[in-house]
Length: 80
Ligand SMILES: [Zn+2]
Image (cartoon, rainbow, N blue to C red; front, side):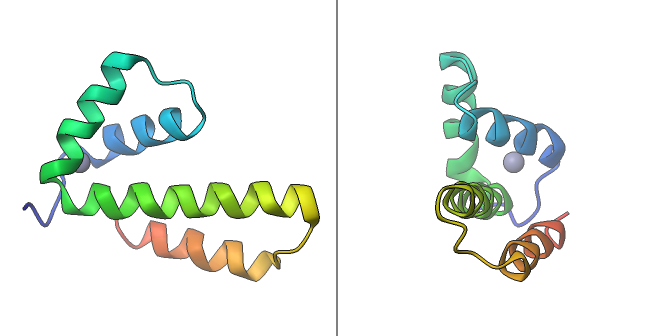
């Protein structure tokens, strides 16, 4: 398991595509293969997913405080 990702910017772009539901089958397969060996990208994926879910919930129910979203965003930024 790698501790550092040498292609993190690419990984992040792909993760965002996937979470937006805009990734192609090929991109999905590539990211999956990547996540198996790439520790920082697994964490990035989960954090991105968490943020996205939070934002969605906030839009629907207006239940999440801004600070919570900010805190998670900060967590993501500390990976790079
Ligand atoms: Zn990676």
